[in-house]
Amino acid sequence: MKRALAAVVVVGLAAGAATLARSQAQPQRGSFADNFDAGLCVGSCGGPWAIKQEVRGTVRTAPAPGRPGQALLARAAPKSGGVAKADVVARLTPLSAGTRMTIAFDLRVPTGTPLDSLQLVDLECASCGEGGNPGIRLYLRRGRLRIDRSKIGIQHAWTRDDAQALIHDRWHRIVWQVRLGAGDDGQTRVTLDGNEVLAARGATLASLPRLAVDRVQIGITANSNPVPATAWFDNVRVTVSR
Image 1 (cartoon, one colour):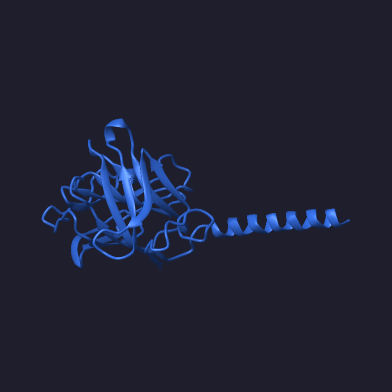
Image 2: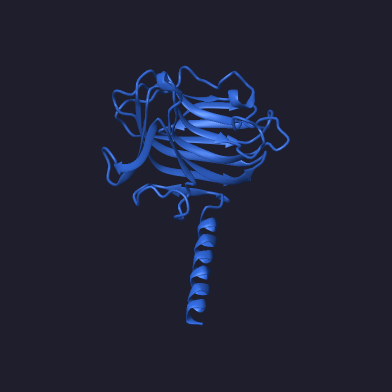
């Protein structure tokens, strides 16, 4: 009898733990923030990050250069050997047209990594039923921030060639504001250290029956350089509103 009761208790505890893990791994329903000082929490540990992507790359926390505390350190191999990724991914409940998102973070790129051809943030839809997870991406080209829309079927990237450029070995604050929309109702604005470096109106969502954004990726989401890339990320904050 005691053995049977013990077995029931063990099974019950295991089921409870599994339920807790599943609940903690559920998509984010709204805003979240992470300064990485407590380390990198991925999966069912209660943090905002569902998974980390390490494809010919690594992502972890380490003592932040030039400031107290920890930061996220991403390292990615050169493009020559194939796609390289080193990022963390937050899953969101699907965000439809009309939703406003703000993705803010600190970025520091050390000397030796080009301020070019680095994808930093992806807003994607993994549940739209389309291959390639359509979405838009914030990236660096010649030191300036741009927005790539090729994955929603628009080859023209949003750019501003006279904008302020990033500097090596310096912490920068980047704030990316997006209004989700499949046409002219879509908008975006990017600031660097409080200065506007990009603003545009147009599609920020793919024209699909289930158009939405359901995940945020941040880190080196792709390195298109022929050399390895390293970047630091800190004080990430994602805000969602209507």
